[in-house]
Length: 345
Image (cartoon, rainbow, N blue to C red):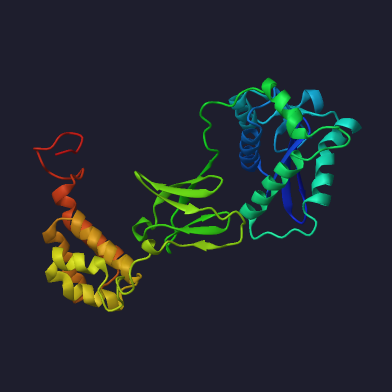
């Protein structure tokens, strides 16, 4: 088998696989290792088997180092080849005959398939390419004096059978859901439920789908192949209009404060007006102090701060710590015969 991939045809990457004069090709906006594995999976399924050797040009998509017989494939691609029990082999530099065998199918495709052809998207283009390959492979060739598909029917018996189960090609990404409820992948953005905002999610990218997982929950979108900054939004992922937090509603931190410490609402109101921190951060700071420190020292410190018009919560917290130092910490100079020599109670 002969595999070739070239970035031609106005930023279109084409991949071609030939066997026994049977032609199969697909087009992609880019041709990376993920795309190469997707293509090979499709191509080997089209042929119904695999050869022992797949000859390639010295492309960085497959080649890790070396050229020709000394070529070492990338471990990722070598592992993929083991799945179908074949090996990659690169043609020698300067081997004109081998190079022509790789390049010639592109010349034939560019001058026979693409001329005057229109298509709506990549799926439409590849569907037309597959139909065109069926037509070409079933056409009589004068130089062969036969039909390629008929010749292939005889040689197909020598192909290695495909695995009973062929796993879907995918690549994983780790993302954080942004504040608008979207996950970014190759400049395109895919919506997730609103309560996922700020969470770490796992994104599984396949040939046709983008699956986003959050623990046991997962959602799926149709994959946008081109990196065009498009938003893919599911209506169920957007909360109904008017269900969000209204500007007139108090922030949730203030609601919690009113439940835990209703006697401090006067200080909270003044803090929102005169505090040095951003309101939400200040309320969170105060809420943390209420949850962590004893009630009496905290309220005494806040009462003193309110009397002197002090709304710097860092200073208020130091005032609380001074009040509880002797109650919760044992100092070296303390005259306490009940303590240990090392200063612990």
